[in-house]
Image (cartoon, rainbow, N blue to C red; front, side, top):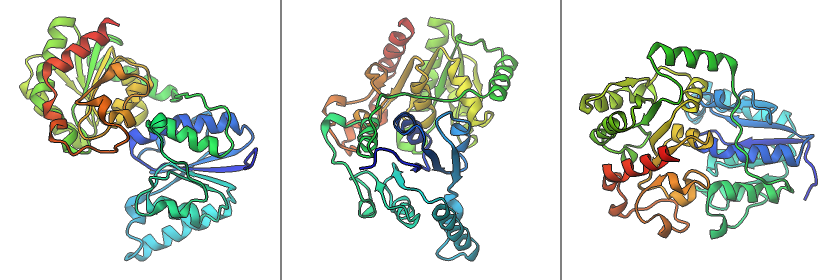
Length: 346
């Protein structure tokens, strides 16, 4: 295995939470291969999170919505051919695919790169496109630990887990202005994240509302709810059930601004969703609720005190549970409030 790479392509197009959990791999690559040029292939919607990252040289956009039409749309096929040609021109000597899907593994192969590293669990037979995989073991059940094993397989040696989310002055200023407009003081508000891309991960709106009321009355916190524009309706449902005022910031922040709103929060309570994982990397007091996803695998890294769910220690290496006892609505208001109070006390 090479002791040093010249040009590395990191493939992790989505989703938001998955990209956050790939950040330590990026930093480990930079520490291990300091002279290498590192490029990240990512969907345009998530690129602002990593733009300006000190350990990254370049971003290549992967427009899944367009490229997914390549088999029947001439313009999309032209875009796909152009992306492949662009990747081949860069002459990568190592590709690290952390997505593990057929479309990303095939792009790694089509890039012409001779050394391709990826997860052994690659779905859709993706692992056949890699030259090197790493077996799964319970000792590194968390995806971040597994990613580090892939970096180690590349020859990486400085494998400490480091989360770097660059602060952007414009986002810091605009987030501060947004908070001020809504009479929110840093470290004096709680953030609720009631939405998720998967409805089955969403804790009931009325329980979020009851939690908001208790945080306001018992701890004197203002309450903010965040999410995408599509999740604004979910936040409005929480507002309808709550007695306290809840500031609805869904759809009102850019991704860098969202980071800053979370960075200033006294507490974050979230479903298993991307902004919750951002809060985890920022070290904020956090409660994150898990249903079907295995928190041993994708929970806040080495922060078990933040996790609420059923049979957590018994999940093993499973990616997903099908046990009805693990449904999100089995998590009670008292459980979440107790964990929130613990986090506020600490």
